[in-house]
Image (cartoon, rainbow, N blue to C red; front, top):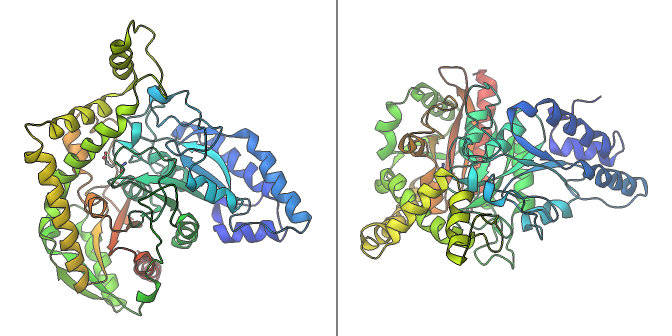
Length: 476
Ligand code: GLN
């Protein structure tokens, strides 16, 4: 059998279209790999009835009919993305039996191009977390070391790609949930400019920062899928048209290093790796410039005020009445709400609901929520100014390589600190990618983050390609 997990997306599509191999063969290969790697806990359900879809694509090709850009590509989706008729639980006990009544725009776009949505991936409950341990399905294990976390919240999607269980998986990123697990598992993950991908049919806990995005092995595959997913959608008022800034592509770029993060980065064990990337970019003709984003250091505090506030409001609808499991012991209306929510939500979700209620309460609203909102506006402006001085800003994706399972689960603050580098792009809405670069002390993958101005994904990919090209030349 062909090793489809070593092939790029376009190569697989070409092979299927030209009848070198069948869509059914490709799907069977990936289903088998999912079964063989079940112990990683990355894929929580394989839709075994989808083989018929693969056969339909093969028949279409035999009849000489036109097929889409993702013909026969098996895609795994995070467990917070609706796919009609399939379960979607957000890895929560509360939604364990929920069946999607309709498909998200993301799924519709993929299916329109003849992709096959074949699996559901593990995540932190309601996408809150950075380790994929807050899940009713249990922790997802790192693709490179089973004793370590996969990262989160889209841990299942990143591990599935890293292990070659699918050519592409879709994740969502509110504060780093695509980029951080991509970094921990050595794969490519992008959070596009806010609004680029419709959020219709995606369950996010903080809608004002959440974006879906593709996780893939290569940059080429990533860009290919992003283009398919992007576009304004009548069902999501915050969605935008994005041309990815193709006109801004140049021979060499001005790479910004954020002055305010310099000291923090220098203290990291992985500093040598970051320095290596800068040297490589310089060797490739890029200019390194220092830029200032004064309030970037306050991003983490700002994020952990704004997003719990949104979570409190977004999750209010889960009350045991319409969507979620109702408590069996509730005796009256109040008890339906109270007991259902108490039994249904996990610890981290409850923590954020409490936090959110606190920062929104009348006595503290101005001191916390309003102040964080002001800081967000300031940060957006600071980034705009910084991008007048450079084409993109480079940081590590995470402060460390993947940590041990259980290592931080009882210490929420240290878990939140892991998001140091990823949350600034989230609260500012700007695009950011994580690409694999080098290894940490324990030999686990590390990632580099490239952030760009709004609607400049093409530039981000281009800079990433320079780094990956240089890495190959230097054999790092
Ligand atoms: N780790 C972050 C958090 O727990 C990111 C979550 C996300 O992006 N969905 O909020």
